[in-house]
Image (cartoon, rainbow, N blue to C red; front, side, top):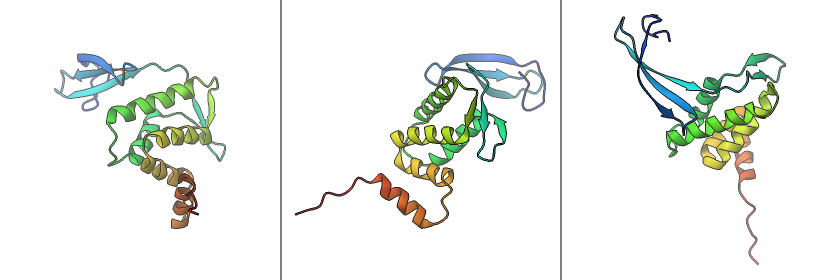
Length: 155
C-alpha cells in the first residue's frame, strides 16, 4: 500500500481488526520511510458497478461518494457512526446483489432514502432536498407534509 504522505510503496501493517460489523478489515499502517501512520479498510467487492446518471452519462460506482453524501445528511444527528457504517455497507451489498452491473442513479437515491427514513427523518429530509432538487421552502413543506400521518378529525 502506497504511503499517502511520501508515496513510498513499502508500508507495514501494524494492526488488523474487523470493522463495520465484520464486513471490512481495518488496518493500521506505518511508513518506515517518513514515519507516517494511516488507516486502510479492506472490503469484499462482489462486482464492479456502473452508475447511469439521469443525463445518460456513465461513471464507476464510488462508495466514498455515497458515504460522503450520507454523512453530510447525518451531520449533527444523534446517530452512532457505527450505525451509519452498517447502513452504508447494507446499501452497497443491496446494490451489488441486484444482479445488474449498471444501476440508475435514481435507484441508488431511492435505496438511500429508504435507509435514511428508517434511521433519522431529519437526515432523510436533508438528503431528499438534494436528491429531489428542492428549489424553494414550499418544496420542503410539501415533502414534510407527506411524511406526517393525516390528523384524525375530532367530532
